[in-house]
Image 1 (cartoon, chains in turn red, orange):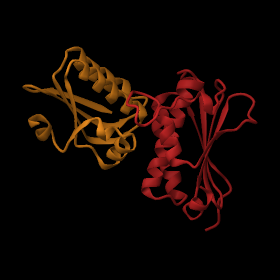
Image 2 (cartoon, rainbow over the protein chains, first blue to last red; image 1 turned 30 degrees about the vertical axis):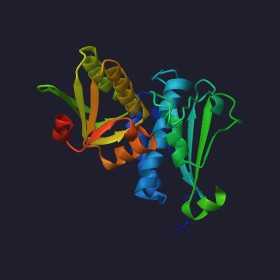
Image 3 (cartoon, rainbow over the protein chains, first blue to last red; image 1 turned 90 degrees about the horizontal axis):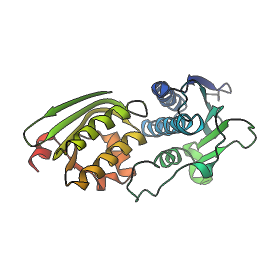
Length: 145
Length: 109
């Protein structure tokens, strides 16, 4: 089947109660774009963690803002783009802890990197953030890593 | 998410159903920390009907575990669904939590 060039785009208010909508969309989009159930669940988890980070860090728990999530496939990749209009973030700002270090917090980025091969902020975006998540499709995955 | 707490002789069972995420985990945290405040000796968390858990849910369990260990209380987790167990293993928390197959096993250990 031909690759669909039109992405799936959803916009939610930045309230945590809407995260379940993003999770459902992420799971279904991943399945539609050919991921296995386990891969789709990893993608659901990663997108949820990324949107939670937007609410916590970019919007500082202001629930009145917007988050836009875009799902798209190319010949070789499944891509998710998460956009906000909050405080500027960089990969250096993201809290991360070693998995061996047992304490609350700092796990979200591990789940994001488990599901996606490339995790990066779009530096061309002047205000707010555009997080680009790319997963190579199975046939190309080993070659890309 | 639904939380059901039942006090038994010697232990309290906290059954959680649905999805644990940034929206729902504060309610779970309140429940567990209220038991910590009472210095509950044994808390058994039943995850049988959990469909999803995110890092905020995991952080809630880690926080409760650490606070209970401080007074030698025990936090036991039972009926962990396969997907949640995968997440625990990925986070290396399967080596930290006391995990049992059933409430009975946890209560008798």
